[in-house]
Amino acid sequence: MSSSSYENWSREELIAHIKELEGRTNAAGARDKTRTENPLSTSPAPQTSQFDFASHPRRKIALKFCYSGWEYNGLAYQLKPTPLPTVEGVIFDALTRAKLIDPAAGYDGCGWEKCGRTDRGVSAGGQVISLWKTHLQFYPHQLDYVAILNRILPHTIRILAWSPVSTTFSARFACKCRHYKYFFSPEHLDIPKMRDAASRLLGLHDFRNLCKLDTAKQITVFDRKILRADIDPVDPSTSTNSSSMYVLNLVGTAFLYHQVRHIMAILLLVGRGLEQPSVVTSLLNTKEGAEQSRPGESPAVVDSKPEYQMADALPLMLWDCIYSDEDVDWRIDGHEPDSDQSNRSTEDGRGIYHLLHSIQSRSEVYLALNQHFLDAASLFFPKPWATTKEGIMGIRYGGRVMIEAPLGAGTSRKLQHYVPLLERKRLDPVDVANERWRNGKGFRRDQRKMLATIENDSVIG
Image (cartoon, rainbow, N blue to C red; front, side, top):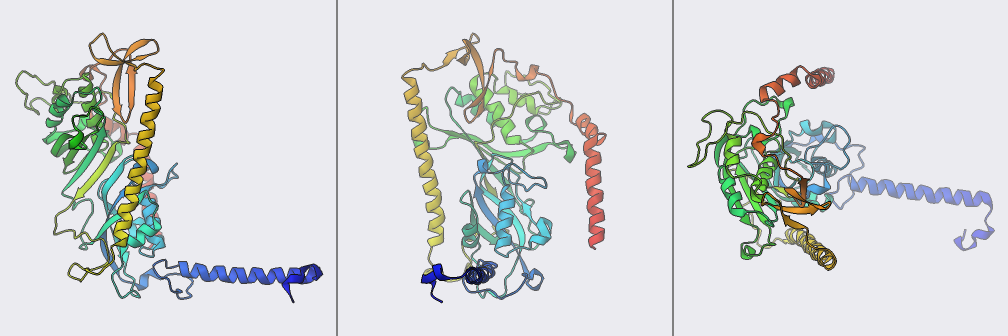
């Protein structure tokens, strides 16, 4: 029957024809779904109802990746719904879609470990996770994990390299040191004083006053070793330009909860002239004689943390997680190190670089636009900066000159009076806070969760 004469068809004939077309569409959709069951191949996959992960061997690998923290609700996946997706959640979904891990087994089933947790808004340039992935036997060559995962992941997360690792490798515990960067504008800040304050962080110290206490973890030891604490211009060639960005380069073997943001908050107060560099020594001096005094200084004993606000999350980046060469062998494709790669296309590598370069170029346009918005406003409004009666750079706000306590990323607190850190109200000592948690709802809630997990495991077993 010709489709050009639909007007002559009866109602029953039209209905029958529509059903026939719907049947063809559904069949084609089923075939397409079968093909996408395995996104690593362009050929039709076997007509199986479910991928059998147990029939394939496993191999342990590490992945190095970067991500834009402001797009995510932190790195770690959460059991409860979050306003934004988590980085781990997005990567886990990509790995399951690529049939590299079993979604039913969850994070524990693939031995998922991360090097360092980053919270909401914090970015990473070289985060690392380790996991057991499925070794697909029907592929004769080593898979190109970088290309496979980057085709699935959003542009705000990029896999940079992968490495085969030993069965005992742990992304967390095998890490020798972690390198954080915190970017800031030097405007109205005394950089030499900030460098003096930062230098006092070097070595092994008790950082209980420079972190956020997580009572659920019941931590009692706060000693951490800082290997590097430098304040440098981001671009040394523009260091004489007052508008050029600076960065705190902080390297340590391990870090406490929110430690970097607390450290940066103190450095910004020192840079603005609200605190002296010696305040860092006092905050580290948690008991008599814990810190050596410098000539002309007498550090106070600060056995519990003064109240203060940590620095903004946006400028913070986990720049790199550093491992020994014996533990990792970073690669950008599926070839073994001794294979001939001279003729291999580097299109995927160029694609990643070109994408990130395009994003960086676009951000420079936003920077130029925002600068011109500021220039346009300057034609009608005066700059608000003014010197306070204490002789500190402040800001005209609400008809008066206020003290401005910088918090990073253009944020600050406006204060009529500034109370020095060592004169502020102190939080409870660590042992008191930990005991309160043990006697409170938090401990009982965690106990119920642990019992529920044990019962669930026993049922499954």
